[in-house]
Image 1 (cartoon, helix red, strand yellow):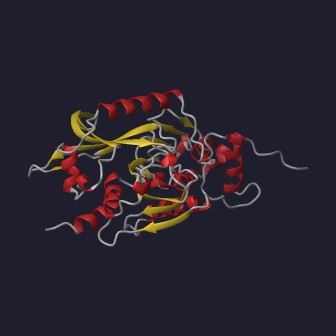
Image 2: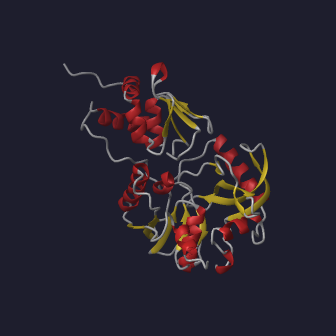
Length: 346
């Protein structure tokens, strides 16, 4: 007599019994924090807002305090890999647990990335708040602390034909950690269709010598809104067109952070350059079909296995989409900003 198919509740319990391994597999950018696995959200970004119970009666239960999302271990699989599709999550779980056809998990992937998931009401509210913050910023950053901060990093925006429109300066941006407003550089995060989905903040402060640097905070850089699949469009390259209107055969250079991406734009202004906000988000960035080549501007941190895994994940995803993928590493220092600064007059 054949056994009845394993039900969702049973699969969830089996996943919960193996939750430490599941957490590391689904969310490799996360980290242990006592009895929890923490990361920035179901997009796999680094951070603290999502907490997954690793032990005890609540093993497998998770909650994202930034979005209000919650669920059990099977729900986590659905949210991370299949945008909430429980049926696909169950099939994946059977394979991962070795109780269905095949005993090995399939490659880590989400549902087709060409169509971003529709936002919920809370997500829409955060997007509006993020856009409102960005619009409150000063459009011209030359002569502001943001401009001086970038110049201290060797990034002289006057050397580009124009200031990137995705950057602004806010003189009094509220900082929860500091408990007061601080000057901040703002950056617009958009998705492939050009919609503003988040605002990145880099809080700034003068050091003892009066030089503008990142504020001495635990988290001097934070994002308002969700950036999964999105990017910061910093330089349009030789075409001069928005990414959604990119000509066929376009190449895109993608870096993790703003400073690294701007350094690449200064060195190679013919390239379109975007920032993925976080290494964990690189492989999730939605690119139009016209983009045939992706250059991943990686840091020199080969000794970090998590970073290496995330970079390989991004390269594999873009290659699976039929794109030519190249990985570029800085010849000097940890990142391309270090390389830029090494070439500065002393």
